[in-house]
Image (cartoon, rainbow, N blue to C red; front, top):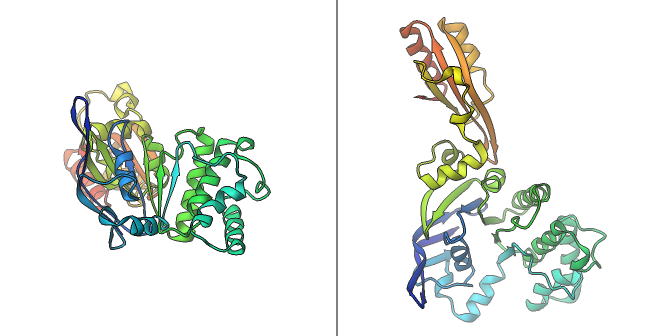
Length: 334
């Protein structure tokens, strides 16, 4: 488990004190994939770097598996970092070393025997899908392959935690998806806790169970991905969600504008693929005009939103709404 307790980070600049992170508290469970999203300057990279002691908090505390990272001595921190892997946006590979030698590097620092190190490196090369490229240099690799080397290197010392600093931002969409699939597989196979930061909601959607939204050094919203997607509270969160959902209002057909008995339905918890609309039509003697609808896939499952107009007797409409709510469908006036 990772506990971030009331952490702040300030820097002294020429124009005064700059606050990068302000009073952030988060709990990240062991084995989950947790995302932190925000635009440039939100403080997410600074917060991530405090998890492995690359930055020290001005106030507050970071605790990983019961150990206070922010209060470690230098020797304790070096040992703790062996269990905290990290991958970077621009890979940070050693260009004079081959794929195999890059992966061996952290094992050399940890003074692992040569035979054990090579066995471990070969195991990781297979895990990340780079068999046959052991002797290639970084200049001979694609962006996705370089990031796979970075992931293998980060896993060399069997870490409990993997930090991902904009790990897909330098990659094309197809390669991004392949790296996200690899991270998901690693999480499932190894049970490793993954914390990633990004400015792309697509990344959060694909692999995260929970997400924290950051703005101006603060966590302004936090929760399960499906809940944040379906009920964004802050303006910045709504802006990020629009990256995935698009502008729902613009998608509504013009014939539905301004009509009475128009409702927005939200389907989650496995309800998005259930025939609730057809059941309502069958049993409540009303007509349903579907004005707009969309299903979004996330790592936690799918959720759907739909805007409809209900036409018929008012009592039948009330009964239909009660039925939908009994099936865990959220209904609100559009």
